[in-house]
Image 1 (cartoon, rainbow, N blue to C red):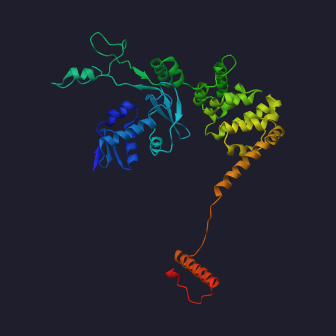
Image 2 (image 1 turned 90 degrees about the vertical axis):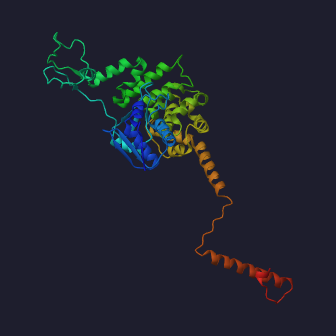
Image 3 (image 1 turned 90 degrees about the horizontal axis):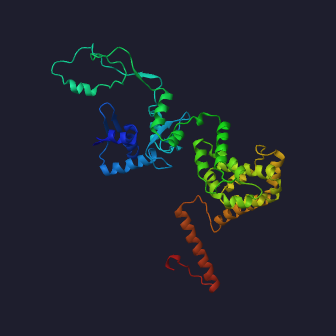
Length: 405
């Protein structure tokens, strides 16, 4: 039994994805083999499958590999990076994100990447009047409708003959960018067509710092600002952006400011241990260089960061054991860790207490004996105990049958 998906080409055209991607996705989800004939446009999934089931799976494909994670727009492109990861780029909003590489389809996409735009000039075939005329009875009007249109001013002669000058479509990278820019809005084109990611990291950090400066109104960054996070993702600098944000929003009133800007920080720090380590480094810089008066407040600042879920406890404990001169001098780094000792001690004790609570009232017995032998020994213990009790009560010498109790 085989299921032929007759409209797969139309589906793929609507989704701007090769038909092989959605067909292979069905095979991955169903655990079935697929057959694909691109020339005959025939796409088959082994086994009987109803249309409703395939429609549900197609919705999953669209959600995973088509829709923009930021704006929900389906106008996206897939791109295979040099690191063998797949990025999804939204043409509408410019959002760039990585595809979940855990799905089996990603292996197929890496082996069959989307066709990149070709460089240079591609010749377009032309019809020349000197060639053999059509056979008698041929519908010449249909041939005319199928012919490639010639651009105006290309040099057609008065008698209808076409000159021998070659003409072509420029498909170089610059020409493609220019055509894309003309079809998009100015804002979308700026986001979708950019060479910023080709810049070294320090240059991208300079761009991000300038962007943050523009976002600051009246010398302050809005606590619910989301633009900085989006720009950091576009420039692939999410982890290090917290260094710039801390410098922009934290000062001598850091304790109150951590509460105020917790939502802003969580965009970068939630479930991102690398960013959390940079955040602790930014706090070291804050209390060790910019505002040394805050050294006495280190336990409170660290405790506030923990209570607001900005830094996980394992990151704190790992930070404690690694004295670094990356953000401040090595001596100052050790001093900050010494000042944070009360908080770190409390954190370790709380963790140990929680572990001990989990182990209470749990009795684990290990034995190499079989279940039957264990039950036999238990019965023998009961007989012995009963016999002893009988002797204590009156010294009855009669045998006690444990099975008749």
